Image 1 (cartoon, rainbow, N blue to C red):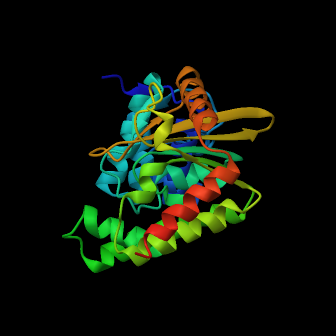
Image 2: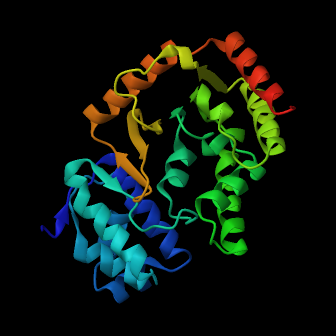
Amino acid sequence: MSDRGSAGAAGRMQIAHILDRLMGDQRQTQVAKAAGVSVGTINRYLSWRDASRLRVSTVIAIAAACGASEDERDYLAHLVRMQDDGWWTTGNLRADSLLDPLLSFEAVADTELVYANALVPGLLQTADYAESLHREQDPGAEPAVVASRIASRLRRQTVLDGHLRLSVVLDQSVLHRTVGSAATMAAQIEHLIAMAARPAIDLRVLPLTAGAPAGSGGHFLTLDWQDDGRELSVVYVELHRRRGLYLDDPAEVEAYRSLFHDLHRRAADTTATQALLTHARSEYDA
């Protein structure tokens, strides 16, 4: 396998973000000396706008000099290797890790499009819903681990108080799939109703009567942002064992964006969505 990789814009941004986080307050000269590279090389690896090819051995050396764990070094190497293909996975990266790609992408994104067909998307989950979900999915998890995951989820939601515009298509079945108690579900749906009233959030329910749109698959989202007039995008596809798949190949991004717009067209309008949410909420009073 080649020791080099040509990172796409989104993947390259993630590599730079991780190295910047790992470096913290350390001086570049100090890290360069420990890694056996020049300060210019450090600058190049920290600049995601640099289009030159990356070397796996160099990114590992820089990460090690910053005190990265073995998992973090392996993940960075994986990112560099996979960029020629325009996709990568999060591998064994912890779900609550500050290196989670979604944290860095959502921090700069202007628009996020989400299709959720099984669960309420993370940005719109209540703390009780998130806790119930984590306990059901990982019943053996220590309380401290669950608490850390919930804190990470709530921290991620702070992007909704910024400039992000969020558009969500939520499958109607999600409203009737009980996570936790009836009270948890009632509060979660009330939260959805409140969030849907925000000007920067467009929430649409895809009715069960809408059928099965071709190619909808599972949960996915697209993120778009601009940098110096350049439009950048990435797709996240939720997986089971490997946590998540990221795509920044332009053709793949456009395919998922088109799929979302088809789902959005099939979904209920805002008035009908409110009615579906209100009806689902009433079912948890029984």
